[in-house]
Image 1 (cartoon, rainbow, N blue to C red):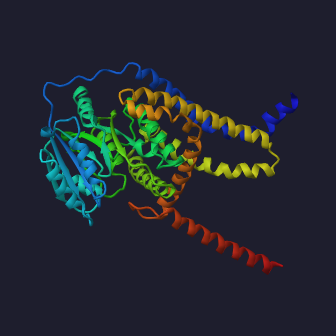
Image 2 (cartoon, helix red, strand yellow):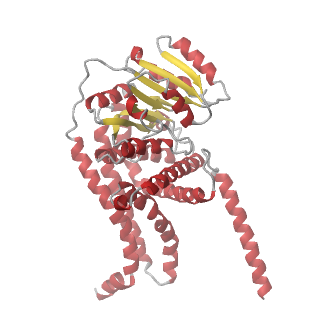
Image 3 (spheres, rainbow, N blue to C red):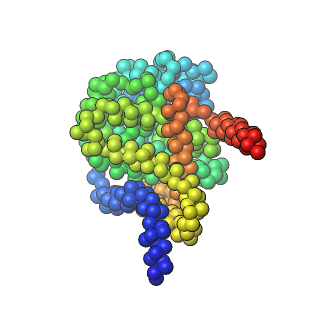
Length: 445
């Protein structure tokens, strides 16, 4: 007993302190939030139909989207929201493919739709800004051209607005298309991506939405009251995080409510592989850093520690660095005669706690998918992904870490450097440094 007490309290004290960081900062708050959302979902209010349905404008920014655009337009046409009350604006921002021919084909195929195409400057933010002035709907809904709407998504989005007049902006739920994953066309990475998206939107963002602390609306599917969005500075063309910037404009500058419409689903294609994940998450990270930097500099000192943004930065960024560094430091501790068994046990305990969080969120997501039987049936069979999700999240954390470093040394760009290109650069630097080390080592002999 004395041996284990000495080993734990004295020799392992330093290591245990660091092992507690993810437990205190991430795992315990996630467990508390998961329990809260579980009981909240048991008492969801029923949405009532308004006496008269409003006109809506659906904006679709288009850039070289010939492969996916028709399916996107078809999903709008097949929506349960009346076509006579739906204006569709395709904002083509300098496409160089046959997107215009796809538009012509869709016009002939869906003659009952009020659809138009407008040419804008290059860039998604510029396309959205130009289309906003052509919108005539009470509500403006933006969707990406490389995804499809669940048939009730537009109706559910409008009903959420009509039942809560305090809400000025809504983000929808984004999910990878489970049909492509179920057919065996995608592997373990895509199963984890689906599980991540489901938990991020139907658990994480629902929790943020409850306290009006939603960090970002999804650029792939979001909606606004027209009068609210036209009172902002519109989409920021100077950042690749224009959706996050718009979220902060509506909530912090206009002092309006931003929420999630969890029963409005937009389906995207599963990620193709590690290379796409690498560029995608770096792009998200860079956009987040750009917007956060602007918001932090505008905070008054008295509001600094009250801001949820500061707390978010501490968890997402400040603790990201020691988490990455400690992985290497744990190797160094072996040379300082720290117990391999105790260190391994610490990692196993943390891993099991992350699995517990994942399973709790899994139950919460199942609750919210109750009205989507096919989606719920697929997700219900994905419980095993909770076992691999901590590893997937660690990979994403490393990509975000690289994205943070790159954001300090590179200019803002929509397309990040590809994984293979950066890997070749790392190998080149390592070989060069190794040769230089060997040369100097030989010169000392």
